[in-house]
Length: 206
Image (tube, rainbow, N blue to C red; front, side):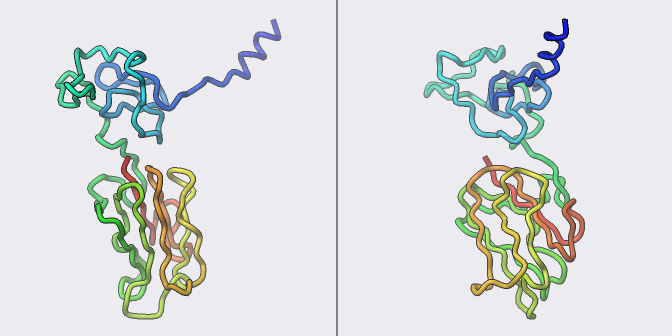
């Protein structure tokens, strides 16, 4: 009797990143969210489900295919997901409308000097592969020595934002965001890991 109980106590269920079709009204198992492709994705795993045609789970919502074999996301019977991009709320930008969307190859987040103890823009939504530059604003001598940059322990891991406590020769710090997710950051002097004060978030779209 003791052996089976011990085995149950050590059981660790396998949670594949994408293995279930969404149920009625976007229902998914715990730890999963329904995304527009009609499948339940493990939280933080918003990549496309690469099911081969022969292994495509039955969505139970009729024929969703188009002439090119892709899913027809306009099908009105498709269960609606919680949101269109698997949005996750992080202070200081808890809503999708708080993010500035940038489609250019490069963008800059400025801070300090003429901006005081704040980042501008503090929250960005960018495409994968975007290079985001952190740079002191004009109008003074404040830089990373005055406003040390730190990645937050919240959000998607690993966070590519480095900890910067001194001013680099170039004056700016360039960060390439190669993976989708949410990457919070903050000033260790004027902000906090929980998003209070001088803080922000970079969202990298799937």
